[in-house]
Amino acid sequence: MKTIKNFTAPILVLFVFLGLAVWMPDTAVRSSLVTWDYFKEMALILPPVFILMGLMEVWIPKSKIQSWLGRGSGIKGAMIAVALGTLPTGPLYVAFPMTASLIRKGASFTNMVVFLGSWAALKIPQLMVEIKFMGTAFAVTRFILTLMALMLIGLLMENILRRYPDKEWVANAKK
View 1 (cartoon, rainbow, N blue to C red):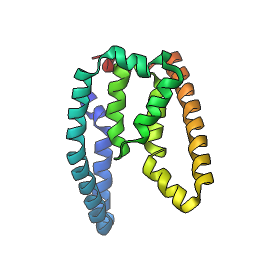
View 2: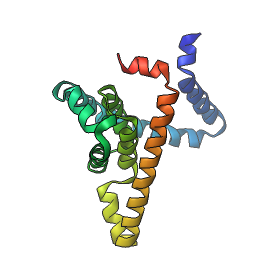
View 3: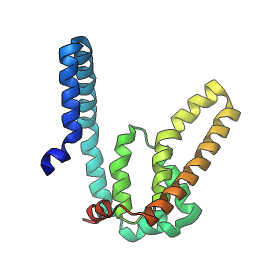
């Protein structure tokens, strides 16, 4: 029964695909093609990411991550998180395993929320496009407001997760 519970989401997706195949075959075909494209994209991107994460686990000591991105890192840690989030290109799902690895090494939840939010919303190429089409004032204002919101969300998440930790996730993260 627990095995079935672990696979609830894929089972539901399978039933949706079967329902689409019966009642809306054209939509099922298009949906299957999109699913296949995403699968191929992830199959090409995730293995190098996992290799880089493994190298990061070995090459960067836990003490460095704690001093750079840990709870006591302050504004320096937030700026490092912003830099780490704004510079790389690629889909957001690449950042999640990296974030989990950094949390295991002692990075603060605040800095990891800032990192993920920066990856999602503060990319340098995106900023350049905004400047071109919307103007510098708009782009800079949006960047600053988004950064402020990310900091507030990060602090809120840190507070909530410290008060009410997900004990199962914490136990699995330390393995």
